[in-house]
Length: 261
Length: 339
Picture 1: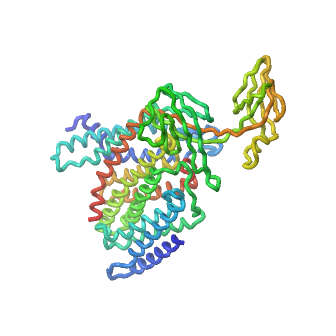
Picture 2: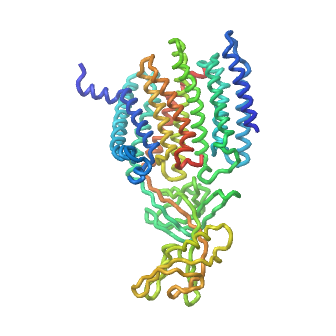
Picture 3: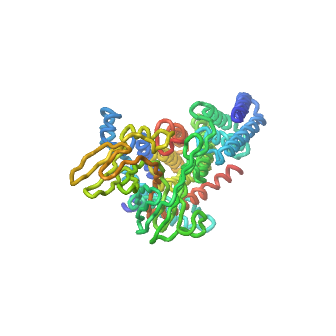
């Protein structure tokens, strides 16, 4: 119910943003960021409610993961209006809102059962909470980078391309350390504590590594590329597609140690 | 004019080479992420008929992460990273103190330490699985013994496991964990999933738990003896070995309701008598050699793993350095974003 209200708020926010996208006069949309914030707060309340019910941080299933992702992204959408590089930009929050809505739509699908279930022993770990939370916070920055990279590729003027390149780079540069810590390091520490092995080339681990390698390649390639290179933003787009495959595709197509998540 | 050495050095430390290697490693990982790893050749022929299985087997895609090509690329990447780190470090130290940026250096050194630790782990890590019933013991790598004192298993109402933990005693040879650890008293320790017992040089993990059906045999004096599958009881002329429950008994054993001792089904035994071996199915109440088959009991078995990993401190140090380095490198971007 709470997630449905949050979904409704984001839909209203999206409609307002569409109206402002087609407005030629450059006024600032003052309502939609607050609707995103309200949606984020509601989703946080849902996470807290579920956490109390299972007596553990509610981050142990697909539904809860999607709610957390949408929640973090909703907060980031609100924050975008205060960031130097995204202030006044209407398209990036719009794209990010669509992604947040997609997460919530998936959360309401049969792919993500919403029943409240306490975690099995392997999931009862503080390292798991850090692993999942940091990975997803990193990924919401990647989501903003993804939107910005698409705009960078679509930009017609060099000035716009450079503007979006700055947003893309900043988003990835902020998300990358958080994702590195969460997906790779905290994940490996949790695996060592649970199973006695840091790394087992489980499909989820392998795809998380592929995501990390793609963003690492982006950060290095950007150092040596020509400013007109289309491959640089393309790497960010590929990186986000891989990150989403790691989250959804691996769960449904490839089995492994993370099959329960 | 650059010497050949300088040219090779520049090529090996170049960021362009790093990008190419990162992409190659990602491609290998994609192959390893898509193709199931470590299966038999027949598995690939069945699931990837025709050219598919030929390509997989020829290019070693059935074991990508230990294939020569992957290891070669990983080795060149390690070389690239090491030379780049050395070059960058010397460059940074030649700058005035205030202008040095050591974030990438810490990150790169962390990755090198991590790779070293990973190699050590891959080559020297040992894991021994031990299954213990209450009161049973097993030898540990340092010559000490582990005894399973008790085990505890809880389920949620829907049947999923809630917790399983073992209480163990360590005898001789190994120093107990720090006294500040509230999880143990004297030399008794609790081992839970996600809470391994760390001892000097190795760790003990709670890996699984299962219920096992044992057969109970009674001898002529009325003394009972419980045997797990594979265990034997000596007789004057040979032994009686409990092989397994017969199929019907196994089907019944998995039923959640009903006392296990009431199973009327039989069990399969190997009987050796004066050098002659026979396999027999025996039902409760019947004789097997000098014993009477008295029935079944449920026995909990704790699955523990004893892991020794010399790479552990290096991997842990590598992680700390990578986290430090990656945040120092990019934290200023966050400042820039918020400014």
